Length: 338
Image (cartoon, one colour):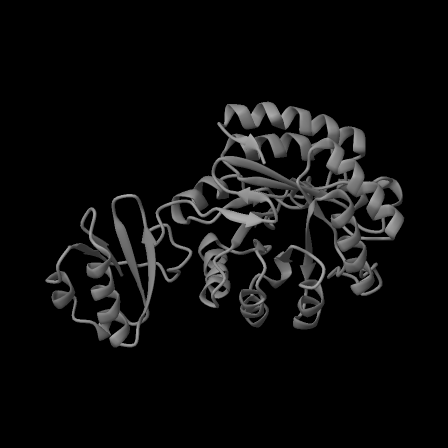
């Protein structure tokens, strides 16, 4: 349930309502706009007498929320969330590009890629130190050594950094080195890991599960936010369908659907969605055109010899050309490159 206060309701009236709600063992979530304040009620609303709340001064109306996710719901938080990472602001007015190798392979490789994506205009360096792979014999990442290289690259280039975590132990290590943490598709419903991410103190990128519905995805975000961390970015990375021409099927419709249901920023990962280098740029442009707040793109200095996801990684030349094109698409979407 959400409680909509009348325009210009004084803080005393808002405090009176929140105090009543909390006295019944429920939690509140405030969304204060220029004129109207919305109070979200989290918990069993049957504990409240709604008629009593309706009678309080400056209460305009009560609106039931039928969705199971509350804190990630646009009804609770009508204004789009803006998330700060270092000196960047991720949100509705900007287009943010994360770029880098799927896996950190060496210090030299990462520094080479970091300098190139920085020069092309990317704002955040992505790199995998922990790689959950389908085969146990595939390259699994450099772990903490890779995180150290990420920290060095971020310090030298000024780029913010993001790395995927796969366990509580990897998260404990990652928070010491990077600016954001990523929960990958395979862990979208690892609820204990989501709770740990909510307590980690860093912004979190939450990728959509391979076969997850949008409501399941938003409920996964709810786990993170409910632990006190509102800085969650959703990332559409393709879903599993019967189609085999691409690695996954990019659900481009997820972008406007999320915009209608949630206040959280949404990114698109055209690299994992397609699995094919030639398809990445067209899908990236489509994502910007339909309202994505940012992109996550894999870039490698030598894709043919990459230890992970070489076929979908862009060369420096292709990435530079894409970034030049994205500036034009961002302008058409009334966004500025972050």
